[in-house]
Image (cartoon, rainbow, N blue to C red; front, side, top):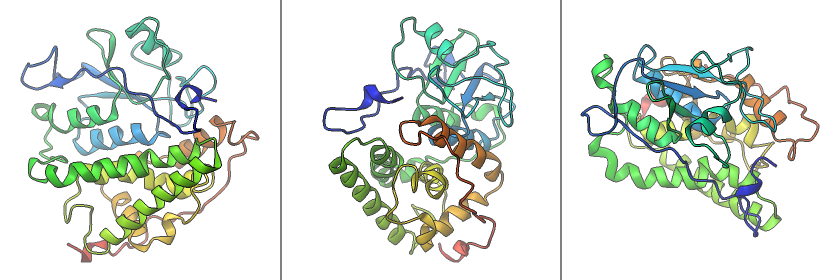
Length: 310
């Protein structure tokens, strides 16, 4: 099992901590100043954590400032691979075959699970950061001198209200689907699924009164929730047995998801083929036949009606 070292004796999935946590700064306060074409993003379009960095890079119009390479969605016992294929490519920066080479070259003897996203520093030839939380915050503000975008998805005025909600979304939903899907006992599975749907029920109610999670403005917490929602009916409902309800069964959450999907350029960041092939082919302990389902059929371009809310 890919996550064997992240299972405790009770059958719970305990996610490993991110190892590389250096920061790019715009004021010279770190060893990594913001510069165009110095940093490169390695991602999988299948991974919800990496998806958020792809979205924020797009929102902040950083495509010409920070390069990006997409890995093959199929991860085998050797880990994430650079392969030429539909929507993925070989590594143009280091000519690595596997992302594990980036980890080992940055920290010889690295023994943890190799994860995406990775922000690579071409100047020092090492991984700068592999935390999606850090990377999105850096993209949000550190490179403002090199983009025409003035967007701030983590505004100071909203942080007091946003930060506790971010924690709930992470613990019970973003990571909650994994804690349910990778649980190894019935008791743990039922506990995690219950917590997950309690949180979804709460957000359904919250979104009955306002367009986005904090009102009329899309913020970081929305961009944290969206990658999980867009994958939910596709893979988490069946593959991870998070099947009390679909997102389709939540009128507010479903239309909220469509609202975000229809925002400019966001659909370009969503690759349903990569998502399904990754989960159903990679997790052989859950899906030993590696059969990828044809469905569900989703029409996310129909009117969402959320513009009526403030």
